[in-house]
Amino acid sequence: MAPRNKFTRDEMIGAALRVVRAKGTGALTAKALAEELGTSTQPVFTCFGTMEAVKQEVRAAAERIYDEYAARGLCQPIPFLGFGKQYIRFAREEPELYRLLFLTRTDEGCGALDAMRHSCAVVRPYLESTYHIGAEDAERYFRDLWLAAHSLAALIVTGGCPYSDAEIEQILTGFSVSICKAIREIPGFTAGTFDRDAVFRSLRDAKDT
Image (cartoon, rainbow, N blue to C red; front, side, top):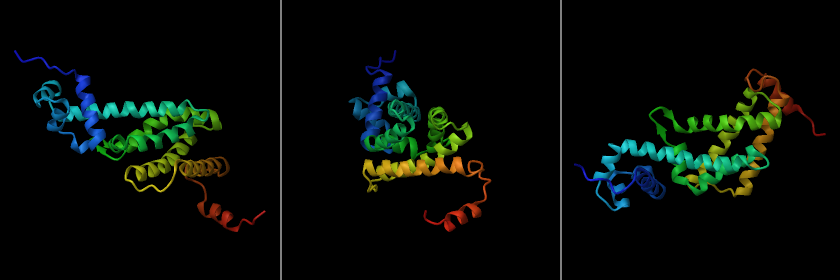
């Protein structure tokens, strides 16, 4: 009869999460997890079978932590702005978990785009009700603004972001205003059917008032 594990599944997932937070997902090996637990590798394989199963559990745990950040943002007076600020905060406070969720490919494809679509589904109703726009416009708005936020977050995680939180908020606000005005004032913007040459010509030829 095999000896009973002295660690629960949740305790081992918690230990694996600590390894990833401290050293990155590439450091999560059976040996590293066993050392974090203070045991041999046997309990790990007895519980999970493979390290791939452990990594899947860690990813799921990271997603739950990210969702907690997002939920706090959506409770703010301006939900989608709160969401964007929490997205940046997650990158600052949990850089290795951000790498795991947004800068690492999965077997199914691009983890970042999967996470973006998940976030869009959560935020879209707030955009529709606040700006009185349809689902397609809201998705376009979120996608474009998320791409800007993702670029800033990637700079933060890789240590190359020169902007303060206040400056980042100004940048995101600028994108937000620009996208919202384009959706409202340029027919066909969301669908991509507008006359680009005409729009840029009008901007170029516009006189100061």
